[in-house]
Length: 407
Length: 113
Image (cartoon, rainbow over all chains, first blue to last red; front, side):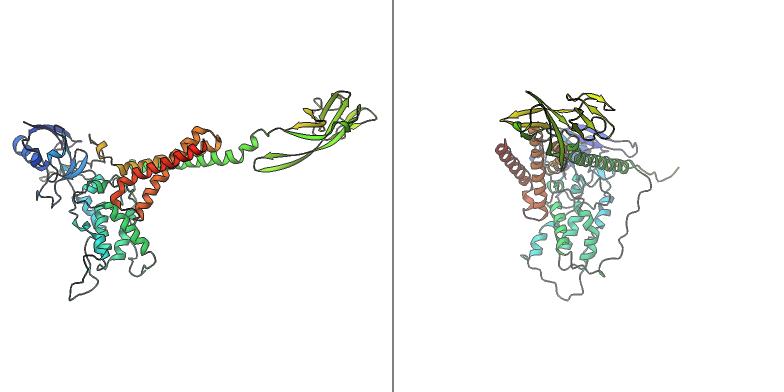
């Protein structure tokens, strides 16, 4: 006794709604000789005669019984029950991306509509008396290989995640058909076909889902890449007369549906995000360093012995300020007051409006020429508008040389 | 009454909708595509952090990690696009290139820090 639990997606068009899974259990004596199609037939005969599914040939040739079996697209007649671990539940679901008519039967209309995009017929270049000879080992024959074996079951389209998101995307089956004809040197419709399918190819995201599920081991991804390379190879030899004047464009949707709205919002958010990110980077690189504190530096003013005791000496202070991406040279007088061991280094900039102050030996005070400000020997205000004493530099004496710290 | 009853089709199932085996249907190529997109966004974030907070090892590590990932998966697409590697090796290509990317990242990381 080996009883399998089987869940089948059911949708009744008379009842409508979302549909859902219904559970069955079936005793399968010989699992390696029982296909999923056999299971469905037995379920229909023995348990539920309303179960609907589609099949014709039973030998992997017609592609009618394609469905999603335990999460992977495949033909019911090609998949054995023993392909799944013993005792594991089997879940059967109709193909994705197609309207469901009943249970596991889908409407393949969208598939064949997209299939037509590839002009899926052979058009000879002229009238021939004799067959054209293409050797079996010719490059084009080898390239096309078994890609012509497609049975249009729709597994690849169902597995493709991009098919849902791009209305104009022809899908792997259609593009595979286009590839077999584009690579064929006997075919006359190269330019027309290329014009119709090339844009579609760029909707492929190289996920290989179609390749993984194809019951005939055809790679839709390979076909798509082949068409793109073919277009690259033939980019210059386009005959303008051969290209149809205008390819009819799909009419723009008048109603904003949820998907296009979400897409627009998505694009907006992404755009805003990138703009903010770029703006952030540019701002921090250009403005950031300007706002940052300039590093302090020690600038030598002169030998300590050159500053006479009891006098005020004026020395020019030359240094550079690095501000952002440019370097600003600064020349600023520094006033050194020396009385015995006490040394004060004043910034020669009036605390009122920044004019240069100078030492007036006669009156014994620092005087500002602009508005009559005056400071005493200690830098304290004694006259005029300055709001605070003169600014001082911190300084140090190193090996007889006086350094002041600027920032 | 309309003699010919018009029956409603159910709207198409989306990929993975109502699918208890959705994870089994997520193949390696799909992860390669998804991770390249995710790493692209991560690179934008880490690049901003890298410029604003320079030389923070954790940010450098993250940036290097995602750049390695993104570059490896980008190389995969290029190699497949131009038929430099046959599509039948596409699964091996994902693991191989990601491993190569992480290896070179490790070498760079340990030679710096």
